[in-house]
Amino acid sequence: MKRDFETKYYYVLAALGALTIIVPSVYFGWRALAPEPQVGECVTQVEHGAAELKFEEVSCSGRRSPREFEVGAVAANCPPGDYTAVARGDEKTCYLPALHVGVCFAGKKFQNTTQEVFVRADCTAPGAREVVEILQDETDTTKCSNQELSLAFTKPARTICMEKP
Image 1: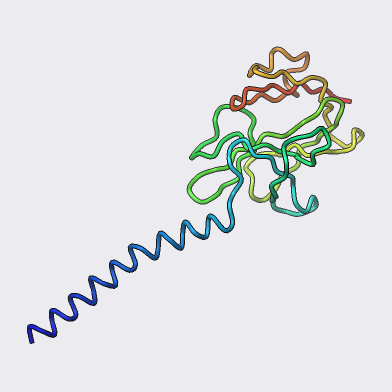
Image 2: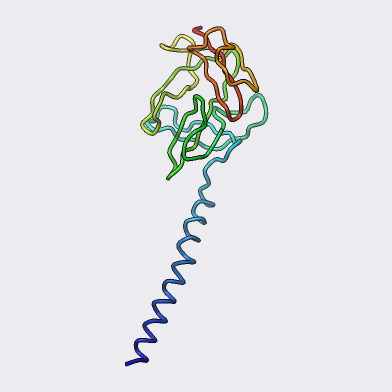
């Protein structure tokens, strides 16, 4: 009887040990196979007409880069600023738009975001805003002539001055 108990005890210990190794390996291995963008990386929107906002990673370099957003933070909450927050498990990926002077953007609501997201738009679109200036290392929209239409971010520090076209 004692031998049966010992055998079962060792099987239980072996199973718990295997789970202790296998579960984290699967979790972290899966994240490595399908990585989420990290801080400082650039992404572009996939399926512009889709109901949910989805991204794919692209190069950040070059004036002709297809990047539309940069990752400003990955945390439980976004830092102060006008970030687009997309939930990813128990944390959020905080995106800031990669805007360019002279280009127009309009707010669009997606199912997986809590606020409007600024996406490229025709300057005649309803609610369109045109980027007139980008202030690096600034986090204050009062430096813009139309602060109500402008955006500010803290990581990286950047203020986007916009006006109606």
